[in-house]
Image 1: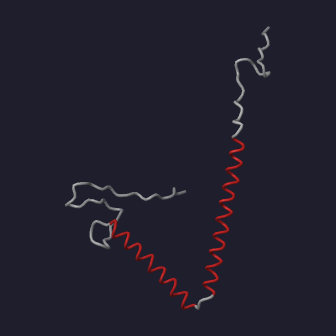
Image 2 (image 1 turned 45 degrees about the horizontal axis):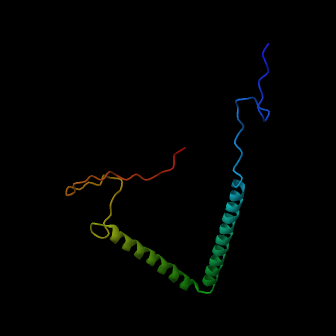
Amino acid sequence: MRAPPRRGRNGQPAGRRSAPAPHPGRAYTDAVSRIFWAGVGAAGGIYAYRKATRAVDDVRGRTFRENVSAVARAASNVAASARYLASLSGEGAAGEVVDLREDQWAPGREEYYPPRRRWCPPSN
């Protein structure tokens, strides 16, 4: 006949330990973190709502022709910014188109630049 297993102080079999008690300040920290991020989200939502309302009011206050002109002006500014950034980063002629699918090796260069891979979601 086998002897019953010995029991420890907490009633579990001797030699086995129970899971450690959670850190006493962890629950408080988690709650404060949730409250903080909820506040950040609320403030961001209020800001976005006010900005969208202001934009809608501006659109309603202008004629169709003025709205089209404003959109064209904004698109022109974006294109100018893109051109400026391309001229800063380009080492060749301005406006040079580079095909990223091909190897980037030119006869005058000593280095070899392998093609860049673009991330694509997995196909199902």
